[in-house]
Image (cartoon, rainbow, N blue to C red; front, top):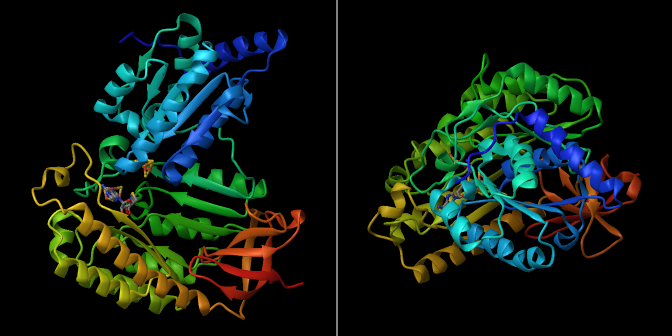
Length: 462
Ligand code: SAH
Ligand code: SF4
Ligand code: F3S
């Protein structure tokens, strides 16, 4: 591998900007295209990548074909996510053949895995550079180097501090992701995240508070605090105190946060959520499994009893709270009895919605080496049963909204019908409604007329 020249970020941004300005003078406006896979953390990272591209003088490409730079922000959480990213990168080969000056950079969690970087290096020779999530701030230096000498660069996963000071280009002005911490220390036995995102780093309290204040002053209506396990946020204050401080800010806004870990939900956090003025009446509390034996194998540090007690404390503190969860089906060694335990928790808690996943072995994690991998046909059969049960519960919970008036933050047009807009209730439920362009980014009161399994339908109450 060729050594990356050590240009600092500011110098590199200026060098690429100079190059792009020259192109513009020649009549060609350089354009960048960013594709994002994975979770909200990646969405937030892509907004930083877009911020860097803006600073370097790239315009926004509508298609990969018209681009001078393509950045693929990948996810490694399940095999399917990696295959999707690889097949997308594969499709760019012919674009590069037609336009050899195109630069292709692969970023995100997959590029923190050595075997995937090897694969990109050898089987995707048209990829110019890779950079793991901890090093997206080095994208300008990489671009500058590629533009000058056309070498290929593959950055290693290095531990860095919490990413501070990168420019951010928000996708929609009324909604903002705010990363409060990076990485994860939990090492759940199935999960790749601690390996690809590194150890936990919390941002300084003041920097978060200032960012949120500036966002609110700029018109943001929804702030989502992000971290793999926000409950373990730690600076000079802990998470409940940070949340409380942000909740005390002036303005009309909704404050969301994710993800919480059941082992770290304190009674103080529940109290802060219950009393909150702006805090969403929603709690995403990943269960993963309802079987104590499997939870132990997963290294989750809670049991079914603890989980149920947190869920019921939340419901008691805020009776209208929307509870959502993540569940993994077919973890190694999961028996029919273990799976029944999961179904029983689902019946007991009555989640509003659940993201269900079939277990996917991740190279380098302890669970991938466990002997009793569950056969795919059993995984699929259990997955279908879980989804059917949850769909019934979700529909019933949504039906309770029929006839009610709820506050909704209006987002955008529905993909299928130009008359219909979408939005989210304070609890995070998806609503389709008749609205106008002026309503986008505004809170409105919506009368819910009809409920379906995954969404509500209604119209604005004038
Ligand atoms: N930090 C968050 C979520 C991380 S990933 C948390 O702890 O809840 C989002 C979800 O993906 C996880 O909650 C889990 O349900 C699922 N997941 C993670 N690794 C997986 C794997 N190897 N196979 C299937 N699902 C997985
Ligand atoms: Fe993965 Fe567990 Fe960390 Fe969540 S808490 S990111 S599931 S290791
Ligand atoms: Fe995927 Fe990385 Fe998020 S692995 S789920 S993009 S933290």
